[in-house]
Image 1: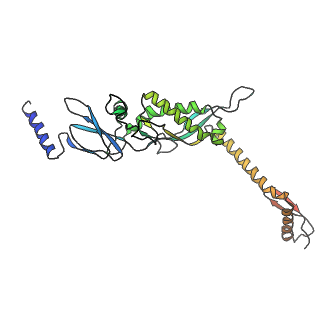
Image 2 (image 1 turned 90 degrees about the vertical axis):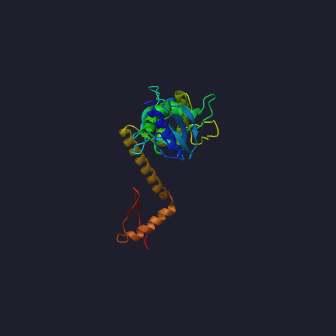
Image 3 (image 1 turned 30 degrees about the vertical axis):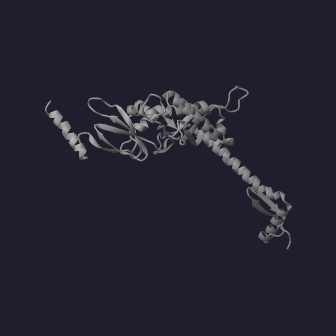
Length: 314
């Protein structure tokens, strides 16, 4: 064994010199939308961090590995869709409505939200004094290694989804519950005065705060993140839809909305009847349509309103 091992190492060194892969030797190219972290993988020194490998750069390795993380815009979506990260809705109590004078309570209802968040990884590598590799390396060692979320041939593995569901989504849910309870459910569902649009901004800010505090680092930043700076803007959030969780409430609201629209339409149709000129127009129409009965009134319907007019003699 002591004789054959040096021969194996020498053979590997020779092969690497002529750019052949094998014995742990090869070229690893970092994807154009990724950044790499190089770790040694030798039998003597274990997996030690060695440095950053830039986008598109090719690295020759000998018993080493380059772990790649995405630099492109990522997202997390909760929606009734097979393509969503969570094929469902986020149901939270919304309870900030007008206070009932009898019970002393505000109106409370469960509201189903569909939503999407957008973020990029914090790829700063020199923002932690005395810690080579900065926040990016910390994310790799603290989270990504645990969930095995590194890019695999340019694609995110199942471990990435597991990481987000386990460490990301619970704090999004918590922020939604804490902010939504301050609102009137009717106003949220109908986005009265832009209340739903304003709510999503508050939830995004609180979510970022909760997440950063829980992870003790700013790993996820908003889409405007600039890797040349240390600032990490809030994750962006978009409420796709909001509706009552109770199907009976949804049906009742829909019926009420239809009745309201019909009443509004009828009101608009009846408005011209207040104009004497329009009534004269109807009389002319009656004279033409009711010529077969010139001695009687002719009933013309206007929307849901029957209008009896006496045809004028020609």
